[in-house]
Image 1 (spheres, helix red, strand yellow):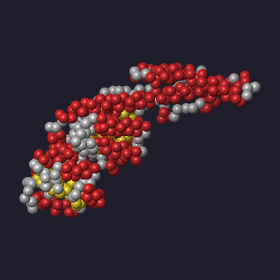
Image 2 (cartoon, rainbow, N blue to C red):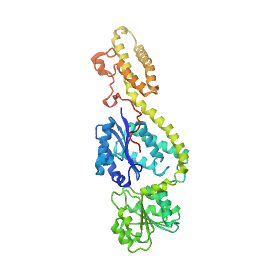
Image 3 (cartoon, rainbow, N blue to C red):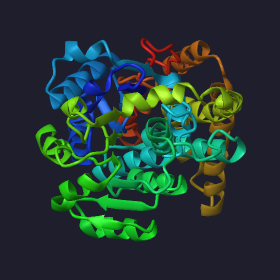
Image 4 (spheres, rainbow, N blue to C red):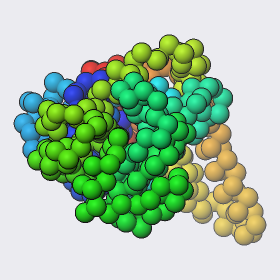
Length: 460
């Protein structure tokens, strides 16, 4: 039986300097997913990487071995020692791993509680795993349920009222630094979803000039047209920096876009200060830029300080959202529990059908004179008796809520009905019958370990 494992770091456990090294842009995420599922103990994998977290959601066999393997893969792609990463890592299992994903999707574990961007990021992470074919029944159900829970929470609570996001907090930080933003010139670097939300937030705040720089110029043009700005090619960026008040960068580039020496040249020809807000992970702006005269540099961790001063208004809605998560989580857990008993139920039903067929075959000489219709009725009768005989054990197995009792029932049924026996038993019909009997594949043979609702070893 597979277990769930969530492994990752976030803004709660690691500084941006480490988060940017562990970040998984789409290309790197795809290769990590393929490497994860190529190992013996990891059967399914989804990788979620945002400005505030990098997390792996895994369906695993041996959770201890899988955790060690996943840690090694993360550390290797980040080019750091596992011992350097492990102290910042959280590892959550089974029911609590599912709860964590539900909370992340709903924006409850975000830097900005109720962050509206989180749902889309989780959806894209799941879609990438689908493309890479690294999901199966457990991850598919888990992520679909998480996305459904996120939608429900946004529609039934006011947790996301005002469309609060990292982008809107960037506007608040700009106001704190520069005062009134009316008439300010802003450059948005990056034309993805975050860039779009950032442009909208600044336009709503009164900014009249929005210049969008992006490596894909066509996307930059489309975004600039939507918000009354204009697109800027990357080679035009230095000239625009000389005339702008604010720069917000949110690309997925693995390398710095604005370097210290380049900006020093720009600042030499400027008289007014320049505010740079870097909301990308990995960071787009060289941290050394902040030491230049006239430059104010803020990164994603600086935004967190603004957030912490404005959390109180959302706490009541967050409590309502947690209650909804409990409800959605219970439904997922009930489904997951059926995976534990399903192989035993399938094997038990197959055993009953096999016994009925064997008894009919053994007694075939007794009803040679029966018509074909009567033979069919007799076969149906035998199958029905076998089914009715097993009905109560199966219902008991399905309906039990005590995981320890479920484990005992599984073990008892498999032993009493010889479901794992290789030799002949009272319920088998010899070598010929065993060949005809449906067999569970190796993949569906159940582990003896039940789905355990263990508490997390380390929580973010």
